Image (cartoon, rainbow, N blue to C red; front, side, top):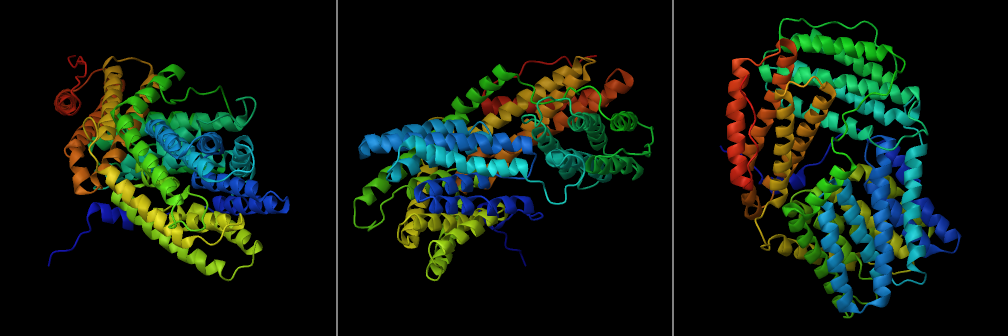
Length: 622
């Protein structure tokens, strides 16, 4: 009998992330929105307490595992954007009529949508900018927009302060402020060991991808603002040195993966000891050396020796880290290309249409009897903003999860609202919901249900009547808007986000290959280029996976791109193997040259067919 298989868009809606409960984030969530609302109620400024709790709630959605320094950008930037959106929305709502207001929000959606195409943090920035604008325009204001923006930002800032100040439970090694960085760097060594264990087996490709993800996470964890005034603390120097020592080990392991010949378990044992030393902030002790029978094994042995020396030093000079290769000007140019490129334009248009249509429809319904006694119309456009985000999964999956989560959350809140005392019971419900957000973010429907309970509690605490039924109706309308706009034809070719990611990955791989073939002795630059190549490739893979899980009418626009990504992945792996071989012998072997030529030709042909662009030629001879 044939086995029934769910279509990709439905399978995505039923899939949830797994992992240990983030107790530290749960604790922060419990001490964020609820206490802020309580403070506002006790001070006689309930509206400000509600806005501060909303700011903390949105920051809690972005409060993911990682280092404290990375959380400053991940939480702070969207919070600033949300406060700015709240200020702009309040001013626009007070000074514009319905039609000009809808047009102004549409224009803001166009800008925010383009910004969201730049990256994950930029996507959160665009989201909170629009949510803040919808709240500011849709909530009647007794105070100025500046005061409302300050209240919102203070709520997000309170959660960020908790993130920076509270120690992680169980983190006792060294300075607890660096526990996130230590965990991220240790995960790199564990990922290298796992790849060595899997070389030559069926899991090798997945383990190589996991190594890329671990390196990306560690790179982000170390890239935030310094937690001390000077970058000379021993703890920071050790972390930077230990991350830098992992890069040649990852390179050698990738070369062994490319060769496909299994290695002994002894090769991975030293890596796991290094991971334990990073977690415990200790020295490593003796390390077992692998056999030196092949270039990649010799490179692994040499890298392990250099890592042992780096671990034994208490802290030397600051290491040159392979952060993102681009300088400030190049980063700005890359961001502008992403925002105004094909992917940014396509996403910006869809966000603008959805957000503008949601605001216009909400205002029209606001003046009808359908809304009844509910004064605020912000829920519909704010819901549209979350639904239109591709970060949360394929379109059909997002719509299903949002609808199911809203219905569940509204029913749960209606049951609690019937029995809880006010305002004490509502404040307690806000606190419990804030604590559940870090766990609920593993599935969009669960996150929606928790956020719905929290927001409805805030609405009622602010003096409005129970609004579960109207919120369900508004959410279903938002789902219809996003489904319709998501299938509308747009100027240019569909699938701009996938093409942009593939083009960026191709250019990064080309730069990496050119550097390796130049036989430059600058290994730090080579590792920087290698990290950029694998990182952009991972981003392209994520965009492809998302596009493939869309409904068939949308998924067809990215057909054939997966084969191009596979070719590019093999090209970058082969380039890494070539780099290790060049270090060992000073020349490329015939198998390396042959595979490089075949892969480069195959990729350039597919790249030209999908983007219309040619890559410059590379000197493969010699």
